[in-house]
Length: 267
Ligand code: PEP
Ligand code: MN
Image (cartoon, rainbow, N blue to C red; front, side, top):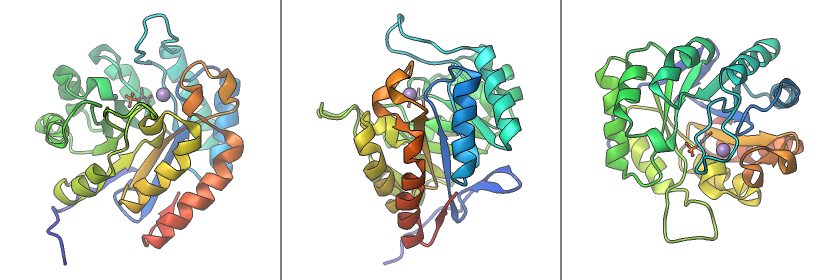
């Protein structure tokens, strides 16, 4: 049975990197930018694995005010510097309207976090730009609310939108969140925008990240945002869900095979 689909709006990030085409795009890196050395180690591994996009939070939304909140602007500079050194693209979060100019200047994709999905002034601010925006689903938000949040960005002119399913809160406590693969498949049908998945925040457990990534790609995800750290035990945030860099080749191989089964490839 054929399913009616909406005309697609692939998002071109750089001449070789487009979301919503055949390639499933990996965006890999630590939860938070911690140092030059840390980011260099990650970037080297990402390039070696054939990846193109480096992730890392400079402005971190943390549930506790006593947790590490990122290096701020210094973190952005580290991220850009290291990405340029290795020929990578950068995705990082703008946590507040005030960060938007700095993040827009230094990042290739601006991330809007789960907690900010309905922060309308922030959505409008990134909607004024001509730059890819990755909109995470609020962990308590319906699919309809998520798509309406994307409409807020588009309403200001920016249609370079990438949706990200990052797990929703359910009654389940064995995992941090529950990856909603229904949402990936549904939004792929009903929305014009590419859809990626974040198996790290969706599971909260390093041992489940690879299986969750495989299911996301099988459900049709156009990309993956995954937390990797040189030494997860020493991570200043989200160490429990971060994969060691030594796992990157296996990750590329296993997820890549699912992508191939879907007529795609992982890059
Ligand atoms: C992140 O990806 O850095 C992050 C904070 O995730 P989320 O907004 O999904 O919690
Ligand atoms: Mn994180």
